[in-house]
Amino acid sequence: MARGRYLGRIPLRTLPPELAERYLLEWHPRRLALEPGSFPQLSSPAIFGNELPLEVEIGAGTGEFALSLAEADPAANYLALELSNRSAHWAAWLAAEAGLPNLKVLRADFKLVGPLLPAAGWRRAYLHFPDPQHKPADAKRIIFNQGFLDAMARALQPGGELSVVSDAPAFFLQMLELAEGDGRFAKAHPERYLEGFEPEVKSRFQQIWERKGRTPRQFVLTRL
Ligand SMILES: C[S@@+](CC[C@H](N)C(=O)[O-])C[C@H]1O[C@@H](n2cnc3c(N)ncnc32)[C@H](O)[C@@H]1O
Image (cartoon, rainbow, N blue to C red; front, side):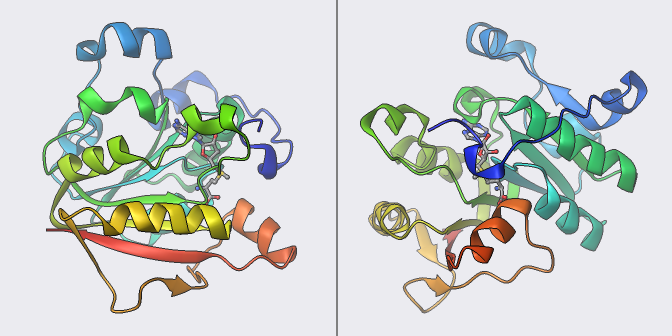
């Protein structure tokens, strides 16, 4: 599946350099792979220059959800991490238009930022509507696997949370089953999972799929 296929064609909105400098970090995959130590840690002090709690959306798409979180909570920092150039630039435009000091977009491959994850440095992580696997060749792109849980176990502070949402039922159950077998996390809710997902602001992707009649499901894990 093409990356970001379900998001439709995202127009390229290139940020002027003075705004890009403030709202958009672009980390090249080759350099990330070869010289991870030349990049800052994904922590509040290193990215935002302060000690506010950090929340990260992984695969943030065009950034509507991360923007809504940052607007609602100025006492925390929000990092929208996104692989696609067009989506990351769109999200950075939203951040620049809102002019928030607590939101930045990082264009990077999450699979390459492992060495930059701070120990117990994140308050919350969101993996919402990750691209599912449709064919064997997609497997290498799947974000939620054992390595992802290891990364979350490292980055989340004790009591920190990981929210996972998907509209693809079989894929959702695969992720849920993997999470349920990991003793480093507990569910943050008594239900096995939550039916529906009703944030203050729904992302472009969520709106598209809900219009087609798909109901998202969510589970939230707490780092023990
Ligand atoms: C279906 S979209 C969901 C976007 C957003 N989370 C939402 O709720 O609307 C999945 C996003 O994950 C991004 N993505 C896929 N693999 C990624 C990776 N390895 N690192 C960062 N982003 C990734 C895609 O580019 C795409 O924008």
